[in-house]
Figure 1 (cartoon, helix red, strand yellow):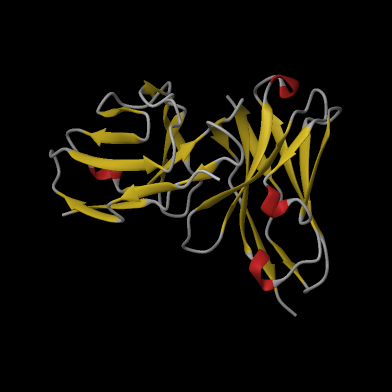
Figure 2: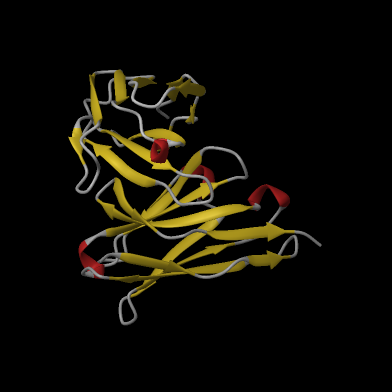
Length: 117
Length: 107
């Protein structure tokens, strides 16, 4: 069965960076996109961008272009998202998802990021 | 960006009844619409894609319809496990955007 296992909760200081991981199993990693989605506490969902694990091609929401960097390691079936120059506005739960193109048909359990000094 | 307007924001209904949630896109999204269910404390799950196609494993009491700018999610024979927040998402163009969510409560 498809499983996306995300790294644990992170507490980071303002101005720092954090790198979240998402290990995929149960399917051919390079056949499907990986999307990342942000959910601020009690709020709706925001699409950050996606990466094609086969080619490394990325497509970002303009809003997150200078905030997020998406990468993959095909040897370990793991996707990564690095968030830089963190502020309190970046405190949220971040999900990686398996994308059947632009439909998100499997989701990781989410990773909570708290930005606080 | 395409704006997705969902209504209502909150819905209370009785077990066994049917409910509808609507999603209006700010421009024609040509049926490129998905619906997700998010139960409290969990990640969202895909219910419907391409406006009306049921994702594998999703009960048939869930159905989707619509075209152009207006779409509907219908849940028939409401069950206790349907308590959740429901989101629509378009994939007509970038950026992908979601509706603001509809929180469903069972009376």
